[in-house]
Every structure is written in structure tokens, then in C-alpha cells.
Length: 304
Image: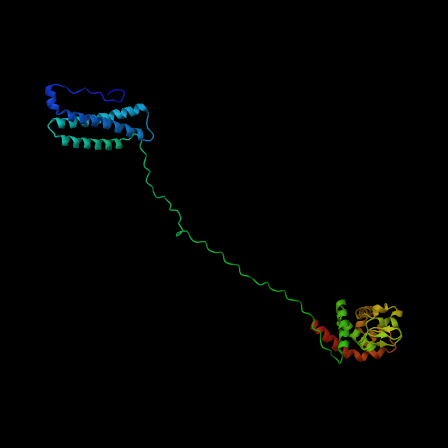
């Protein structure tokens, strides 16, 4: 083989004996054309391969392929020389061309590695069927806030002991003012009995004192300048006319003076009331004690 990728061979002898052995000249020309065709196909196949190798290595590969082809051609030539027909020679040439192409395809210089077989993973990935569905969080129940119990309002008792509504309301003001001061129940009974005697449990203005009539009142009295539930006198230092016309103030003024009387708890009701009022009729308060007790009990009981 030559370096220029051409196969070097000697021409067949031209003697008469050799011509007899080799057969007709047409067969020689056909074999030569087959050789040239095989060379061209091999060269084009190598040129089309992706990632071709260097020219030196391509030359070696071409030479090896050509040598294989020459060996096969030699076999065909021997069969032809031994007396085969022209048709057999053409069939052998076609078979040679087919095998040569298969061998060339199986001997490609650049091979694409096949993808490695996929192996199942050790742990299967969770699928939609195996993954447990998230449980919905329970909806918090709406709780109705409990209402705080409202403090019980004291029930206003109906009038007792023959009193009118106005009289009963004034009695309530006396009792509730005394309870706010923290006085004993006995002092409450004395205060109610005194107001029953002095004003018949009405908040009276004075006919002799026009100023007192400018304030809310429930009638007129004519005992000098005495005003209010306890008929207290501004001229005697009990307070101003406006203050004495206020039932709550008048009650506080009476009870404060009563609590200052020594031994008032052991006194009879009329004596304790007289010690505060200094009336011209000291025994006039005694008859009101039973009714005053009923009135105080009726007002205090619902509040306790």
C-alpha cells in the first residue's frame, strides 16, 4: 500500500497462458471498476462520520478496509478463474459490496455511547395516591360571650302604712341617705318618725320665707322660717334655705346631730327626736314609731 491512500498492485501477466487462466478482458475491467467504487464509497463514508479523527488515523483505517476488500476480491477472482460464469461473478461482487458496507458500519471510528439502563430508585417517590391528603383544621366554634350579670336595682316598694306615693318617695330618700352614712336601723326609724311629725313626710316651703318657694316643694308651712322635711330653720344655723330644701342634705343634718347625742340608742324614740329638734311638744313623736318601723323595714328589706 502506498502513502497516497492508493493500493499498489502489479498488473496481471500478459502472456498467452495467463490470458487463458484469467478469462476475458471484460471480466478484468469489471473487477477493476468494483474496486474503484468500493474505494470511493469508503472514502465518502469516513468523510460523513461526525467527529472525524486525524488524517493519519483515517489513512490507516482506509488502508485496513481496502486490504479487506482486496482479500475478498481475490477470492472472487479465484472463483472466476476456476471457471465461474459472468453472472456468478456479478452476484459475488454484489455480495462483497453488501458485506463491506456492513463491516464498515460496524467499525465506525466514532461511537455514540448508549444510555445506561434506568434503574428504579431505592425509595419510591411519593405519588398523589400514596400521599395522605392534608386534614382540614377544625373550624373554631363561635362562643357567645357570656353577659355579665347586671346588678339588681333595688325594687321600689309600694307605699305602706297609709302613705301616698310622694310620702313614700320622701321616706325612701331618708332611709337611703342614712344607709349611705352607715347609721343603724334604729336611727333610720327615729328620722322617719320625726319627719312624719314635722312635715307629714312632705318637702314643704315656708309661707313666711318667700325664698324657700323658689325651690322644688310639695306645699307650704307657716311655722316661722322652718322649711323642708324636718322643718329646720336657716336662722338657727341648720344651713342655707337651698340646702334645707334638699331632702338628702336635711337628712344628713338631722342624723349627724342625733349621732352626737350621748346615749341616744338607749333613749325612747320621742326623747331622742326631742334632743335633736328641741320641740315645744316633746311627746308628739312617740305615736309615729310603729308606722315608721313598718316603713323602714319595707324600704330596707328589698335592698338587703
